Length: 297
Image (cartoon, rainbow, N blue to C red; front, side, top):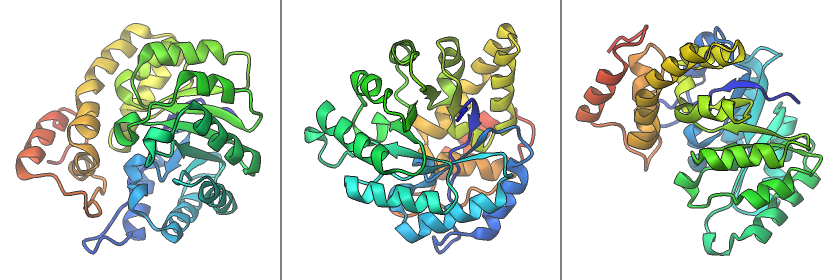
């Protein structure tokens, strides 16, 4: 499976009652499908997966599979705390139309999640999964930075095809690419802030929160690199760092959803206990995104 390209880890559109709005999901896809995305990530961190019930996750994935063109890859976040629950959720996601599963590191008992425990977890999931597995390291949320040795060891598993690394350690990304190059294994950057640097070191694509709202620009960065237009790519990368930081580290999912509302998509409310952006935060976000085409304030 060729993972090369850009994937938005789509937000889950909630109504005022915090229930999923299928209507708003359809509206967003009518706009997202105009971009040259390689596919979509459903139930990643920006989808508020930790607050979703299992049946909601499956329903949302099934709907995304209907809305996305058939040639787009659908990657489903299937990670749970228990290995057996992850195995079950991965199987259900596959039945609902997922092409691959994105499996986050278990983290509640982080003191016990050493390299041996993590390798055992991912190996059991991959052994049982009917679809390929992509490892997911997001230390800002989990407190666990998947050790590079784990990634290298797991890369030889025939059903583990890649890793999404959101840690932002460029040296780690380069080392993973180098040490896994002999295997059928691909590295995806987990943020638009270090997308170009990751490409230079051998990553093949990115799962970028910013692609939810600036899909055209993030896809353009990918294309410029593919065409060898590095000077243009570097300038665009510089332009994307501030808005990407705003919708990730600074203001989180609430900020991402607020920026979508400003840019003509539907972000809507977060699900409690996450809180919506404050008025001051929204003014700050508006100041960052106003230079981009489509800004409506």
